Image 1: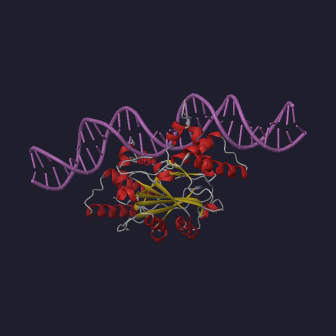
Image 2 (image 1 turned 60 degrees about the vertical axis):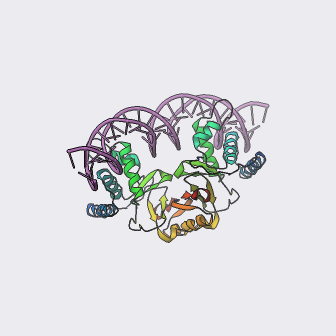
Image 3 (image 1 turned 120 degrees about the horizontal axis):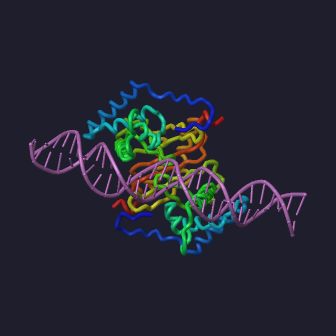
Length: 163
Length: 163
DNA sequence: TGCCAAAGTGTTATGAGATAACATCACATA
DNA sequence: TATGTGATGTTATCTCATAACACTTTGGCA
């Protein structure tokens, strides 16, 4: 996503081979679970993985077909909903954007917690998983809440933008 | 906000006196900081405190003037931005709603972290503060991020809706 | 194979959330 | 009282997201 600042943003997007690798893994996992990674779902996941950073829904819509006409909103939103349900992508509500999940392997979690470190300057976004995203769940349990999923959004400046 | 379920929702809204008490405290704090709790800002804060639960921006717009015509969107959005800046209200991005801050006293925090337990069934929302909202900040520090503010949004079911 | 139900997709239209731009007003300070 | 700054009012528009419904694909099963 955005670049408001002047320094380097050397987040190299993954090469085509590793993108396809991740798609293949996702595909295999869907099939194993009796779900289908259909063409539009695959395409949206491709775009998210290729980009390597959060993307707006309407950017996905615009790039859905690189040639010819773009997709319509429901096509992309439905794909995003599916990917989120399968733990392959996350919605980052505070910036209305979507990103491929960093660790789609961690599927056995009772609570799929996702935390993001979002740089308000350059948009660099880093996912935090595991232990570090868990402590809220303890608070929730203490309050009697049963948590389906947790979104933690931390806004600030990344190391590069700090200067 | 919403009620999709059938059980009781006995979140008694605060009485008028205690609402005015909280407004007065907020007002005093603004003045102490050289800021002005102007009429529209005060009105929006009133509505949030009275409600006791998260409110949508357009609900605030509609109720801004109980008699006669409603406010225009920028009036309310600007007031919300101010209240958020002053730590008097929070935006809960994942449900596009706004809520009065539960602990506006905790002002000395270097990082104003706010965590919410949101019931997807009835909309009951509870703020979690202090220790329990902090662990992500450690992760952020380890990654070299400087965090301005953190939003933690936990979705699930509250004790009443669990059954 | 041919039928059916379920899941998925395409398309149109519209609803909800948020902000840009600019004119006007209020207020503290000199 | 002149003046600059910050706040508000107003119009218009932009972005984000979904409802509704027709059509298609898929996989199970007679």
